[in-house]
Amino acid sequence: MKKIVLIISLFLGTTLLFAQDIQVKIGFRDSIKSEILQENRNIIIYLPNNYKNSDKSYSVLYRLDGNTQIMLETIATVNRLTFSDEIAPEMIIVAIENTNRPRDMWPVNTKYYPEPNIPGAKSFLAFIEKELIPYIETNYKTNKERIICGQSLSGIFTSYAFLTKPELFDSYIICSAAFPGCENYFKELRIKVFQQVDQFKGKKLFMTNGLKDPLDPDGRMQLQIAEFSNSIQENLKDKVVHKYLTYENEGHVPYHSLYDGLKFIFEFNIKAQ
Image 1 (cartoon, helix red, strand yellow):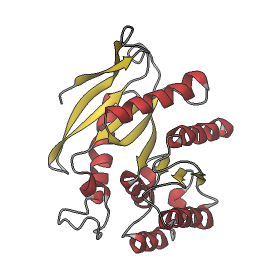
Image 2 (cartoon, rainbow, N blue to C red; image 1 turned 60 degrees about the vertical axis):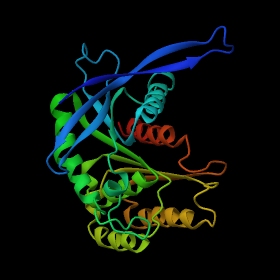
Image 3 (cartoon, rainbow, N blue to C red; image 1 turned 90 degrees about the vertical axis):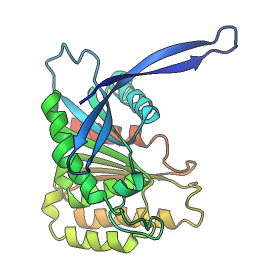
Image 4 (cartoon, one colour; image 1 turned 180 degrees about the vertical axis):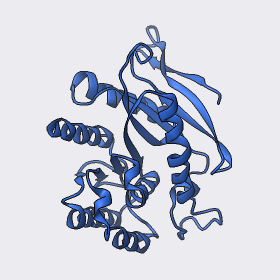
């Protein structure tokens, strides 16, 4: 497993005369050879300040669609909640880079992605459960609290993970995830899994979408997301801690989703102590 430190350069300055490059370390890239997926999967890992010298154990935030931009935004959000707002604890961040996004995220074939190697969500979830999480929890100081965040297509996958493997994560953050072409699949899945509601006990679910989403000109996606939220409230209200936010002036994948989701999760944890 090869580790590469990731450093990005930020171009800052109000004029060309005073412009400068500032290098920021956002973590390091690691690689896992997956027997389940039959490929190497890269992950970007960020460790809290003073991690090496600390005897603390940390929660882990798993981010789908991992890349350097996602990682930079996530680190900034977590650090604000930790050091400025003093709501969230320091945490380990694991961003999973894509190799074949549609394959990994879709749990069922749709007219939008009719390729023969789709769906692959079941295998991708098995990779996370049986290979990625054990690797992280064996090699890093974790407290076994796990959070997952997905957006758009990876939000569909996060919805799938919540419904089929609710025990895998403590908290789920889902941004702008409707179900185009697979509405009936998810309706039938909800009917099936809601027959055993105890498996969802204590889970936290935070959902968002923007009402000015350019991918939703007719409002159909908004209705699908609202229907999903309503089904959670009706069937799991005594089991799941759930919140659904819409942003009136935001588009696809509202920027504040991660901040608001983590704030919701850790404010609840503080109240529950």
